[in-house]
View 1 (cartoon, rainbow, N blue to C red):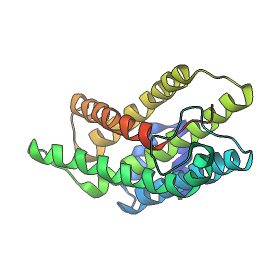
View 2 (tube, helix red, strand yellow):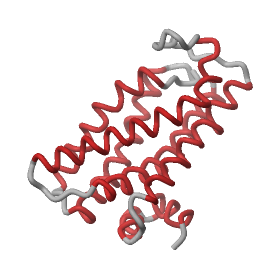
View 3 (spheres, rainbow, N blue to C red):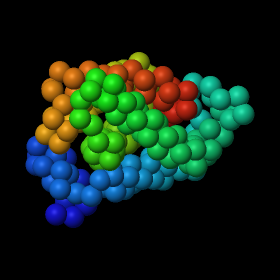
Length: 195
C-alpha cells in the first residue's frame, strides 16, 4: 500500500494504519510524514496568513522575530521547529523506554510518531482555518479544541507503541502525555495561531 493510502487509513481505520506502518521502512515513512506535515503547516497555514498580512494576536516570544512579520518568518522557521521538536520528543520516548529496560526501536518510534503527526496535523490545519474563516477569537477554546484533537493522536500512537514495540497501553498513554507536556510549552514559544 502506498504512502497516501496509508495516510488515509489513519482517518478511516487507525488499527489498519498501524498494521500497514509496521511493514514500512523505518524511519523513512515517519520522516516523510513529518516532512509533509511541516511543509503543509508552512505552505497551507503560514504562507496564506503572511500573504493576507495577518499578525498573531499574541506577541512574539522570540525577541528577534517581530510580531508583524511573524507569519512570514514562520514559513521557513516552523518546519525546522516541527522537525526538531519531533526528533527531540521521539528521542525522549526512546530513552525512557531504554531506562525502564523495555525494548525500544528509535526508527519505529520515528515512523509511528511521524505518520501520526501527519494524520492529526492535517486535521489541525483545517480546524485552524475554520476558526479563521468563522472569525472565532477565543485562544483558550482553540487550545482546548487542539488538546481534544490530540487525544486522537494519543490513541493512535499508543496503539502503535503497543502493536509494534510491545509497550503496555498504560505506559504508551503516559509517554504520550509526557510528549504533550513537553511539546506544548515548546510550541507556545515558537508557534502562533492565526486568531
